[in-house]
Image (cartoon, rainbow, N blue to C red; front, side, top):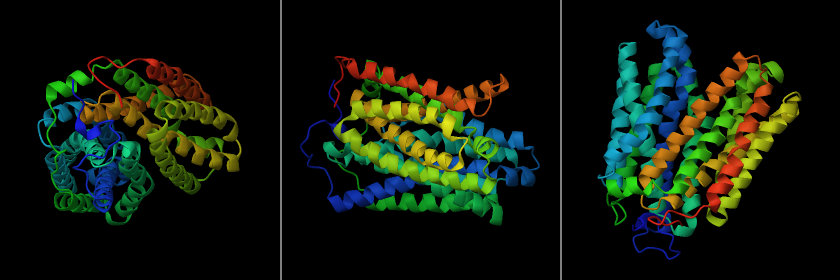
Length: 408
């Protein structure tokens, strides 16, 4: 099986690569696209009270918008990606962003809850595939020696959505109504669409992928290993992080406003960790991934002690954000390396694996609390789960690639 040239391990720069200046502009546009998509997901939590009051629905019912969105992303994301594999990547991204714009406009004018649910489901259908295509386009435009950094740059959009997009969207919703937030998302995504159409021209790397080739490439044993690492590591983290606000409030003793500030501190750490993870992916990916996973488990474990001291809790939040966010670019790089003939599909599947870990961790944390564990107990429970990902990653690194594929 021939590896896709877009992520070829060859150190030579392919002739289709754009100039550094054009590449920076393209990466900025792709990052902006991911930022808007991420904001559309995370902002919903902050809009729930306004939606509940305006649509006359109880909070748990409105909260189902978050649940359904995550389920659609996890289950339907890879399926949508398979359907888009025959479409040139730039065309696929333009189509997905166009649908994203339209669905958010529908959400902004929704006359009832059912219409809003339908709009959110359509938005969720674009989520994983738009991210996957954006990552693959970014990689295809970068030298092989900068693949990890390209992934990290585009992934910064997720972190910026958490640190900037969601809080800003919540503020807009609180002051001008939730519909204004959706209008803002629609306008920003339309601008991203225009930028991609204008400034990212079709190239020799924009050929569609073969469906059979991409699906077969997923059978590599290392792909399964990387996906398992993604599920277990994020399950460990979200066992705690799902309940981070009550933990910081009830155990650490912070006020609600300070908790919000600490979440921003976490986000700043995430921006740092994402950049570091991207650079490490280009130099020593497997050792760095194992080290980051071990660090994640260690910081979660240390949190069991620092959570009782306010200044130490603040420091731990920054370090936790940095360590956690170093993991995704390393995971994505190893997934791409394990399945070079399936760049788009493996990226989408890896994103779904992370979402599956998030769902599993949230469920585990809730089950632990229901069983009588305290909020502080979630720190070491999450640490133990995250620790399982370290030997899993080490074992995956030691495995040979399936003969039908090649690893970068």
